[in-house]
Image (cartoon, rainbow, N blue to C red; front, side, top):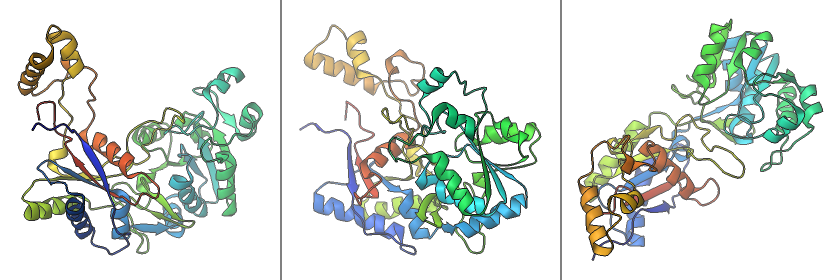
Length: 396
C-alpha cells in the first residue's frame, strides 16, 4: 500500500540534562527507546535535532556577571561605554546588561525604535506618524521619548524596557543615559568606545562605527569569546546566543558542536544500519504575526549539522503544475503526469516558474524552525526532535 503520511515531527522526552552528562549517549538512547515504545521504524534520511540549550548544559558552558564585567573592563578600561541596539528581553539581555554595567562607570544606552532588531516594540509605528517622528532621522533623549509616547509596557511581558534597563544599570552603581536612534553613528557623539549588541546586523554596525571615528568597538561576540577565570565561553559567538540561567549567570551558546552531531550519526548508523541526519538547533527563523516578533535571537539557527542537511530544498509547486502544465488532466492521469515531472525535474530550479512559491531557505533554517515549534520553549520536556519524511515528495 502506498504511503499516505508525509512529514512527521515527534518531540522526544529526555531526562533533565546537567553539566557533565554525555549528550551523545542520551540522544541515542532517547531515539532508540522512542522507536521501540512508540512503534515507529527508523529509516534512512530521518532527522534527529537537539536543542542547543541541553548541549550547552551538558558542556557546562556558563558564565556569571563577574566574568562579563571583567571582560568589559579589560576592553574598555574606565571609558564611558556606548551600549547600542540591544534586544529587549529579560531572558536574552538583562543579565548580560548587568555584567556590562558592573564593568563600566557610565553607560550610554542607545535603543533602536520603534522596535528592536527582532521586533519587540517600544512604541507602535502608527504612533510615530501621529507624533510626526521620523525614526530614521530623529534622535530622541529619554525625556523627549517620554513626552512623545509616554510609558508603554511590552504587550507580552508587561515590562517597560526603558525603565527596566535603566534600573539594571543603576543597580550596579553605574551612571546611565538613554537615547533613541537607528543610526549607529549617533553614539559617536557621546563616546568612541562602543559595544554593539545587535545580532544579525552586527558586522555592518561595527564597520560603520570604525569608519566614522570609533576607537574601541566591540560586538557581543567579542565578549567571553575566551574563558575568564575558568568561565564558559564561545570562541565564535561570545555572548551572542546566551540565555539567562540565574539572576547572576548566563548559559552560553554551545561550542565544539560538530563532533557531537557527527558522533550521534555514526553511533545510530552502527546500531540501526541507517544514515540519520543530525543537527543542533536554537531559535527558529519565523515571525509572529500578532506581536510582530521575529523569533531568531540566536546568531544562527543551527551551529552544527551533518552533511546531508547542507543546502536548500529543490522543489516544484504542485498546484502550479496542476493549474498550468497539466490543467487538462484529472485523477490517475494527473497523478501519473505530476509524478513523472517530479522524477525528471531539474537539479537546480532557481528561477524556474514551476518552483515559484516554494521556500528557498536553508534546510537547517526550515528544519530548525520545525524543531523549535515542536519542542517549544516551556515545559514540554522534549529537547530532542525526531523528524521523518522531510525529504519525501509526492512520488515517495
